[in-house]
Length: 243
Image (cartoon, rainbow, N blue to C red; front, side):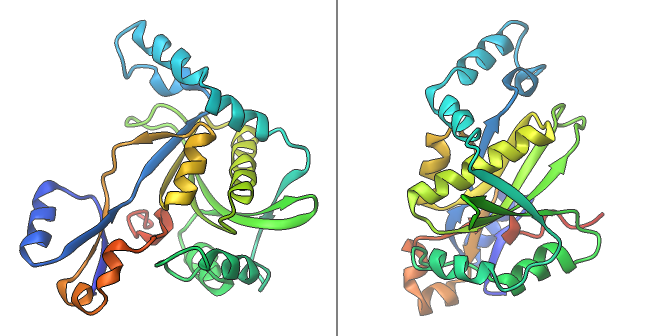
């Protein structure tokens, strides 16, 4: 394939891609919102330091803004068993502000998140004042040896990229995570507009580990790929396949 989101990546794999003439387009950014900072930091720092870190991140003004917005009674999320054509209008709005992205219309959402066997995604319509403003896809992960806290993976979204609309969708996701009782939200996503709003609402950036690469031939034929305004999400990868 001429394009790949390289997964489980090591420095050696990146050197191989570079030696073959492939070009790194962008990283898949990672951002986290901590519902319960104490649980997130527990055991990751020396005794006492975990409480200090939890207090520091837990008291940030941006996090308070995200939590306050999530209490908006005009926002509600409705679970989707199967998408009809309704999200196509949202995708038409979204694509106007994106240079490059996989198409995220209803047929894609059904194929990717509902029809594939062995997958365990939850799809939600985000409503504001009884009007559909967005679609988000989530996946809940229980505590493990690697992560001792319960996480909600925010896998994908479709919405207008107007900042006020993105904020409402973020508030909806935080509200749903609170309802589900998770300790943190993890979102792997690259898009400048959405990332700015995530940070403004209390999401904290973490080091990226995955990168989008394209072959030399593709870059030569479409040189603007390297500088385009990309939308890349966790849903674009195949790392989370059924075991």
